[in-house]
Length: 350
Image 1 (cartoon, rainbow, N blue to C red):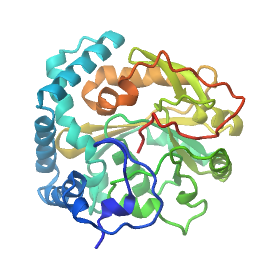
Image 2: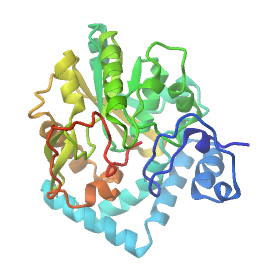
Image 3: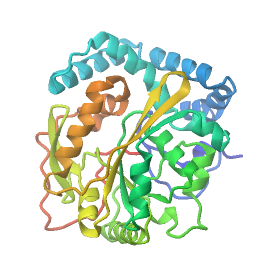
Image 4: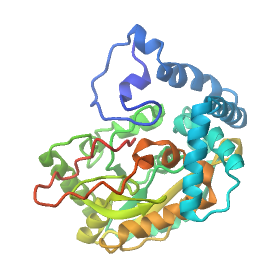
């Protein structure tokens, strides 16, 4: 017997990271059965879904508050929010914002599981969509599109919605672990042009494999597909550009901007936020053609504006070590020995 969690594979830190492990299944052990991941994803969440969206969401909010009640966790969240507030010049009530952030912790970790087992119409009924016509019109031009996502809010629920629409999307990210059965099936399909399995990144990827991924991404864009990347990845490599985010200066992955420059494919930013009652707000920004030299600061400014308006959605950015550790001392390696598309060990993505 094998769990879905083991089929998708994840061995990153705590609740917050995933790493590609290939398609090989792993036999269930007693250790797996008693792990928090098995209990949360394979035991608790299927039960919560039966309660309906509102009650499921309320229980997840309660679990998040409970998990964040431990004094060291609470103190760390308050400190991170104070730092971010000062960096953004925001006027948050830190105590109130911290409580809202805590309520979103379990929602964030649940990923797109609350949408599992629903019909297409049932999924669509839980989303408020703004700007999808930007992606539709861009794809209609036949040049492909670069979907620029991030780790704000319910980002994997947004990816789930995209696949439900039938949009031709390929994910140029690490294989996401612990996702719904529907999304897991979609990302393992091999019967479509440009199979998704050929796009997944992994940590410490050799330069040759990374170059192959970029070639595949260019071919997919040439054939009119959308390629999804994350724009908020701290990435000390020769394929990064300097940026300042929440008061910290560090290099951020810039492949998305360079890929757009090479292929002329427009960039369409996408953001998905949690809404009350188990609903989601999915927004597509207007397409643009970035200047690689200024693209990273421009995008991070846009992301910061959303965090300033919705601090409780920044669970990743206010809790993941890769955003909290001092970044000013991290140099951008010179391009003399490129490790093409090789994610740094610092990064947690999924």
